[in-house]
Image 1: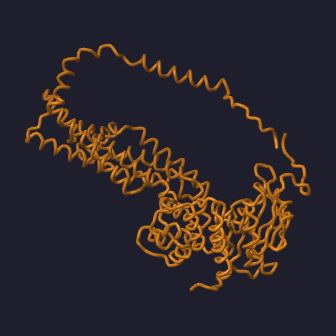
Image 2: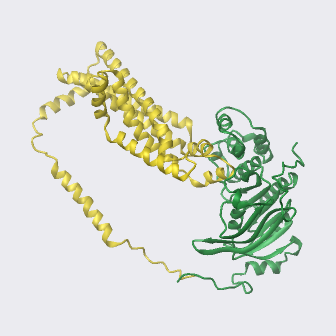
Image 3: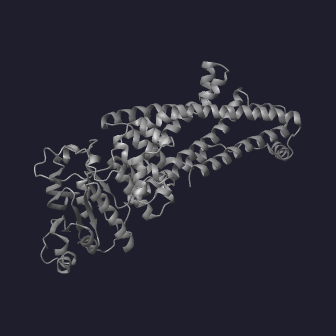
Length: 274
Length: 266
């Protein structure tokens, strides 16, 4: 139905650098005065699927949250569809530009699958419609589609609290589909899945990106999944880009350098109090 | 990074023991302040009261009176709770500031509402009843408002706290999806606090039944008034019947609450 649909493009006329869906330009992030990320630059063309890999604490989640507008960078700029994210924060068009699938799915367990999925549309709904959708037995077709697409069509009236962890994650994906952002971000989407399900889930995310012309940026702890499912693999360590390669060039040597406990190349003194 | 040795956490010694001493002192002083002497000599009456409790007056005529009084008491409780909800729900939204869009307007409404609610709450329902009797006379509305006003103020405070005290992460996800404060309330705060809210409302209904029974002492009719009359007539068997009726009412409210909670969640 909605295949190959081009979204009413969030005004890309002012895009400086052509078809980049999101750009990080010399971004740094500090937590409690301590530098956590950067300076880091990354440009992702529209429609590309990028995997962020790297050891724990490399800053993968922080990079995603910066792109989602949930963490403000200490310096540098974030550009989404040609617009400065700093000016988009809190605005109603932001949910259409970018959406994050969090590591813990952050659903409302007391509500049904259907209502959780519908919540993705809240940014476009007025108050009356939100109340009606919550209290009346009405179906929002895009939400019903999304729930079917993630394979929960039979369970749309089930309370989310009664679902398994894997099913809850698919509810969160359905909510993101309803939200309908141009850039999909996913934080460790396969962290708690067995290998077969991990492949299945990444296929689903890739499908969501490809079919609807979305851009996908996901963090992954398993580099072999990144090589298999993504167009581009970016290695992060200590908040910086260590490598940025097409999957075929991500060799075991490259990965070993990324994950080795004492990095010989990237070792640099940290400014710490005390 | 730095050393990974675990060091026991020691509380600051001074402040903690000072607080303990203050609290113990307060308890001792209040125990000494209450006069215990002079309360003796009721032994015989107490024995008579206790035996009559197990031999209640179950004559049909009196049972009809008790039933009427019980219905009246419940009516006062339910009407009072309705007023309390009308006061409490808007009060909760204002005092928690969950619908405020700007930080300054939130601060102003929160502080102002908190002051009003604290004033309403500071006065006990029995005192409210006496005040309202002076203003409205011996009218049922006096009883209803006497329960509704202080209960509404307490409800606003408690509901407001519950609406704020919900997990942060689901709310952040809804905000990221573009939800306004009102939508956040409907799709996030209310369902997340849901079971707590319903449980609290039923608990307060139970309190309202007891309060209504007490309030009827001042002449508004109901179980309290009947207890007063029976005590004056030294009809301890009737007092027994009335106390049992009150117990039944509270148990019934509790059972309804359980049933409703089971249907609502879990």
